[in-house]
Length: 104
Image (cartoon, rainbow, N blue to C red; front, top):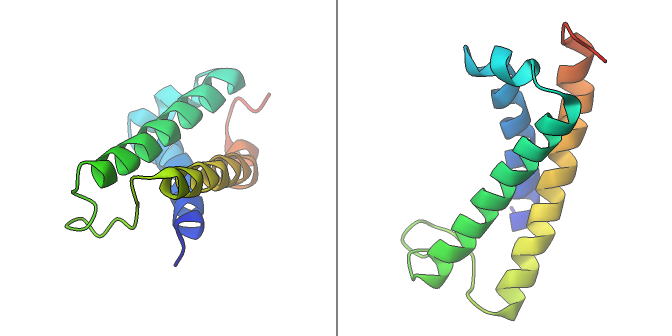
């Protein structure tokens, strides 16, 4: 499984978790659509940056992260982040927004 595919799955999972976890889901669903996009995007950027940081700190091998701390690794991480952002928003539009109570 490539980093891009894994990041895509992570984007879908994050969208579903933020919408359906008890107490977090209702709070998240009450936010404006623009706020939801920002929260999802920032969380995915944090996860991508942390993965790259762990790879650069030498912990990537022990955590089974295939992230190299060079230009190629950064480009791979940015591509994976883009895939995660796209899949996150697609999952929200397909699996969450149609069922939300305040569906603007």
